[in-house]
Amino acid sequence: MTGPRSAVVVNPVKVADLDQLRRVVGEALAKAGWPAPQWYETTPEDPGRGQAKRAVADGAELVFACGGDGTVTAVVTALAGSKTALAVLPAGTGNLLAANLGLGTDPETGLQVALEGGRRRIDVGVIDDRCFVVMAGMGFDAQMLEGTSETAKKHIGWLAYLGGGAKHLLDRPMRVRIRLDGGPPMPRRPRAVIVGNVGRLQGGVRLLSKAEPDDGKLNVAILSPANLAHWAALAFAVLRRRDRVPLMETYTASRVEIYSNRAQARQLDGDLIAPGKAMKIHVRHRALLLCVPQPDADPDLAYDAGAVKDRAEQQL
Figure 1 (cartoon, rainbow, N blue to C red):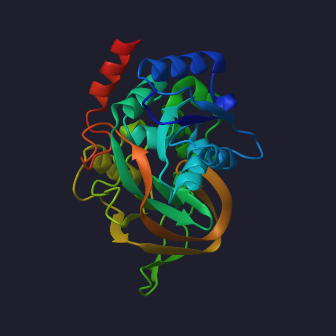
Figure 2: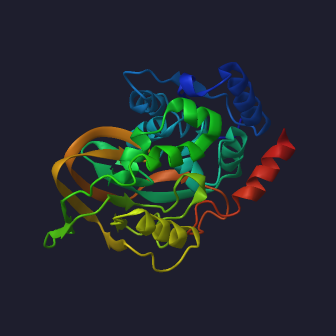
């Protein structure tokens, strides 16, 4: 056995057939000459942080996170700052990190990415004692998640978020003050403030076109549409990948503070957290070793993920 020691932190609720997943993972790793992985199931009380820490303490050099956004975020928080690599095995309707890696909802492609050896140290954002890799947000993006049912996601995937968002398109804007790297407060009345490390939303839509995962900076997007026409113009520009998106200001900073006059919906990497009046975020530079498609130096984490998927299918 020449491969690294590995572990799988899995949310059993998100996996339709856990026994089949165990077989697929075990057979793929054995074929590659890796030792059999250890398995750790998440619980409602611990969505993955404790399990990932135990895996590292038990000698894991690579941890597969298999579940939704909450599972991945918990494992990221446990592994940040360590030498242990993270690989994503998407489950259920997938998650934001899987979308940015080009994995979709396919665990076999996630396995192939890990086996091919692409590794990259990327930044993580930090709020209190929690880390995120993709983006954190206050306002509309979190409201959209809040308004989307698990049943809808199960049946139509990421498109369910469109229905969840439609319920909040005409909600009143927030009153916020935003400080970047300790600078003067910027008063705004936005619908959402999104702080991202990489740029893709669900469905592969690239919101933050200039985001780089390892530059030591977070990208800040302030979205301020006031009516349906504004939303349409903003969405059109994002989908067409325009350099300038109307009603969206963008900045970069290593520390971001957002203060609202009332509690707002908030999310980390597509996982809702408790509403609050503030988000104080800083970056940890290259804190996470992530399994990515080759070539692992490309700024786009999903570079050539389609070819990886083809190779994964050939292995079945």
